[in-house]
Amino acid sequence: MVKIDADTIQPGLFLNLNSNDADISISSSNKIFKVNNLIEALDTNLIVLTLWDGIIPNSIFNVNEYYNTILYNNGSSDKTITIPDGYYDSDLIVSTIQTLLRNSDNYNTINVLVTLSDLTNKLTIDTGSGKTIKIIGGTLIKRLGLIITTSNTQSITATNILNIAGSPYLNVKFNNISTNNLDSQGHRNDILGCIPLDNAFGSWIHYHDSGGRHNILSTNFISNLHIEITDSNNNPIDFNGLDWKLTLSVHFIKKRTHDFKRIEF
Image 1 (cartoon, rainbow, N blue to C red):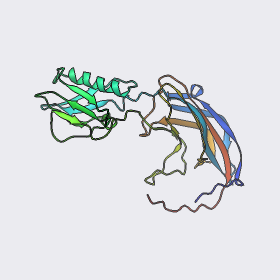
Image 2 (image 1 turned 30 degrees about the horizontal axis):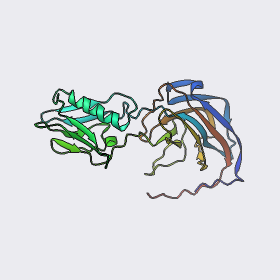
Image 3 (image 1 turned 180 degrees about the horizontal axis):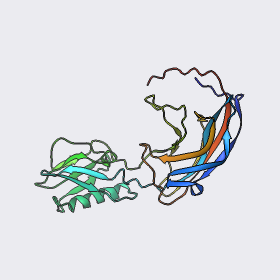
Image 4 (image 1 turned 90 degrees about the vertical axis):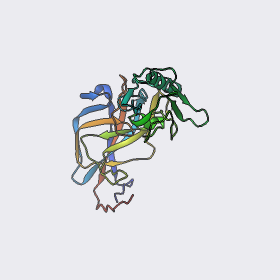
């Protein structure tokens, strides 16, 4: 196991990354920063990177291209409704789904009712007399508490509660540098750190590392950093035109004999 003690950490520096200063901008959450002065470790050292702090806008739509569809069967054919991108509260998502179903070519009736229980926070879709529905898929159904159903019925009540709060956290990851990090299945991942999305939509998230998550790099030099910010399912983030800032702490540690033990999950 790699052990990082205070006496092994050698002085380093901070890298201040502003999204609007990126040398290459692939998207609002995918940036490449060139390091003008090459950062290089001695042969006896390893480079350690820490996500020190960050200022991130919570300008992320909870309904977007990755979470916006409901696939259903209307008794005769398979259909899809697509909810427009935006930030929705519970009332707005319920009324929007109801409107889209009422305007669909099969139902086309005000008898379709979509409601949310105040007691259980579960969604119910009632198609009205003579109409049926079966949920067959979609990218939004998990957040709505719906599951795939096996038969057509007039009314469906969600199995789980509605939760459209969006991703609970953001992943900050490398796309060009490998680390020694492992995920819960023992696979290599290059996530530098996670930033909780615990502020309301439209506000700013101020993050500071409190746990000392040290990321030991597999390379002994840094010439550029390809940073991507994703949601908890590793989907790209759209900050809708707003910029962000991250500060990375760079330190060096002396190489040791590493005894990596197998980790069972």
